[in-house]
Image 1 (cartoon, rainbow, N blue to C red):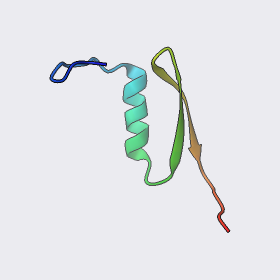
Image 2: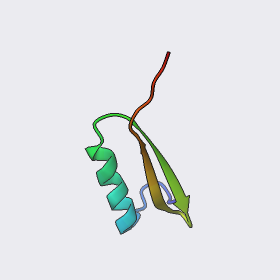
Image 3: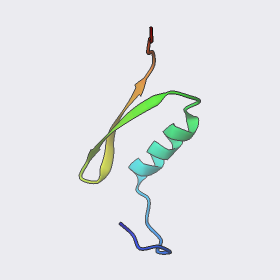
Image 4: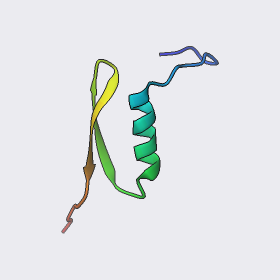
Length: 50
């Protein structure tokens, strides 16, 4: 983890993840991480509670 005040470089995959999160109006996502990078995102479309 970066020190406080230290800048971090954001990878292309991380940028895409941030864009996806910002575009998400509501819901739930699951992020699979491999080698410290987001590899797959699952977006929950429908959930039913009784």
